[in-house]
Image 1 (tube, rainbow, N blue to C red):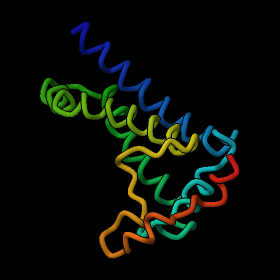
Image 2 (cartoon, helix red, strand yellow):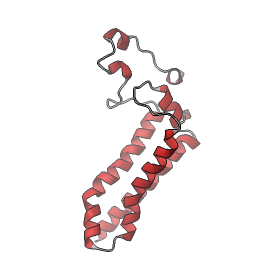
Image 3 (cartoon, one colour):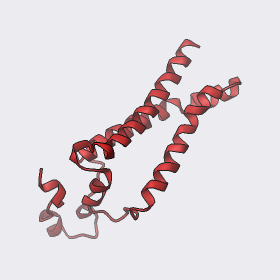
Image 4 (cartoon, one colour):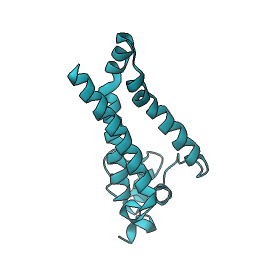
Length: 139
């Protein structure tokens, strides 16, 4: 039972930290650029229109808050067991989101970032002569 309480606290702290870092990403902004600027500076084939971000963020954060809220409302062993199945992944997603925001804003492009020049339908010559987006070239 004590371990379960620790997990609940860690999950709640993870969620709050994730939301706070996402807030700071635009309020400060982290790394000197906003999330919209970071998104717009990296060419890709699947960035949605800017107007979709506030609605997407709201729906994502509400969806992610649900397990945290359910932690407090668990009344039965079945409900507790349900969260036990996802708790590690839930905590890891909060941590991964924080790491992703920091990497993105500090322009640490990791192996899981896909540059449009790396896609097969672009020529090899294009990928060799690909220039950094202007916002990142200034740094």
